[in-house]
Image 1: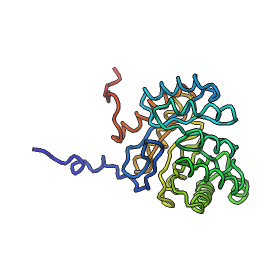
Image 2 (image 1 turned 120 degrees about the vertical axis):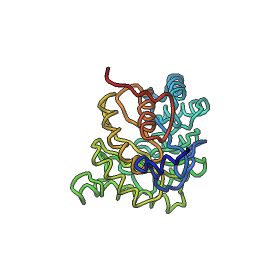
Image 3 (image 1 turned 90 degrees about the vertical axis):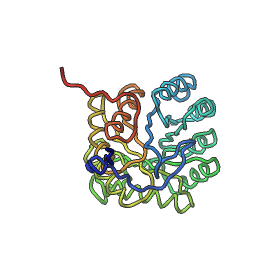
Image 4 (image 1 turned 60 degrees about the vertical axis):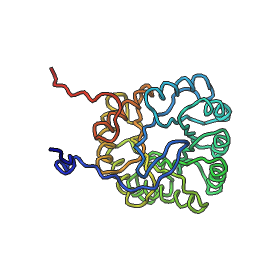
Length: 279
């Protein structure tokens, strides 16, 4: 006799938040798309060969999306070769430099990661948006508790969920003002409680797809545990469309940890689920 397992065990059911769907290269993010797993290279992006070799390792480990750092012109100069060689979409982290965003978009990046607290004026954001639109790029609005805008820190006194969400919504408004909607959002902190609270508030305030992560989570074991607490609770609540486990370890370990979190919640399957007693 067959039974609907979710009817028998409603406590195992995760109802995902309804988010808008965007496209990051050939990967759909949000809506009913599978939750994608990301990592970031730790090679100098200017060294195209080393970066491509590491992207290959990440692809083999199951990475859906890979981010690379673009802090200088040498890095964006290497991006055309890197983007051509990669089988997965490449996200360019442009740090403080809006010009790097323009260069990376032209070089073939599928997404640009910008930090509202770092990138500067609305005019600079507008230039990055124009480049993204012209080159079919998505944008990730990446808010970090450690680099909030000065006016928000003065208003709230310290990094808090309200400040992080206000930063994110302000930047969303900038993109929307330029008729740009291919964006996802993250509100990361190193504190799992602050991270979870900020994402819960953001999930109520926008239908944008959300990129989950705990920033500067730590080394392999501690970082995995901290990320699992914050991201696991959010995913269990149905919040999150793409994830990165940030570890001070080899990037491949981030992919493995990400899949283990999703597999434990029944949200993705990769590899064998091993159940064993301590002995």
